[in-house]
Length: 111
Length: 112
Picture 1: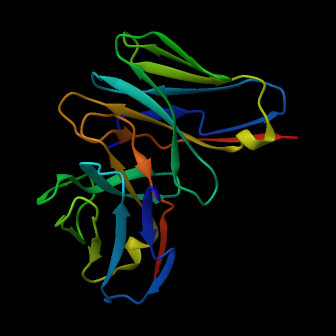
Picture 2 (picture 1 turned 120 degrees about the horizontal axis):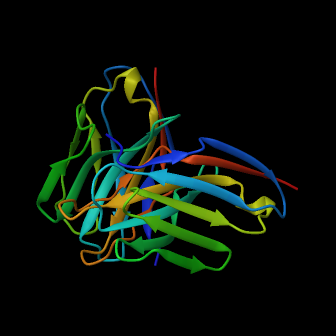
């Protein structure tokens, strides 16, 4: 079963607005990653945050992690039409070699 | 580097037919995995391998076989295709000491 669950399932915003999507998970993790999937393509890694980190930035991306609430959020600032994609969180646990993916959030950014 | 490659890009099968989805990586990654992606279900792990000669089952292994005779290749075999196996299949690899997965472009499979 999926470890991470993204929320919302779908998000529609205008270019220039910020997009926030959340990921909740059930068991302890070592790290949490966010991936992007453009339509008809494979997933591309965006950012990784470790369990001992609370916040991480990469360009227009900001990821937070709250291990007490077992949740993470991905913020995309000043969104662009090219950000239109599905976004997945993936959790890595100590006993697992392969990360577990959630169902994803579909983001549409209107020009 | 070509990264992770998958063939074919698209395949139509009839129920009961068999086929092999190919996956290869040229990054010398130890770990390789197969996922299927269905609408509303996200990615579900089918099988994975932690090195040549070592494979294990994921969340949804039934109806699929894998083998890993070399570091580079990780084929996925459907022995007797069923309509429930209609999906998009992704292969991924990652280095043994790393967390980031590198995905192939996917294979769209339609089973009639």
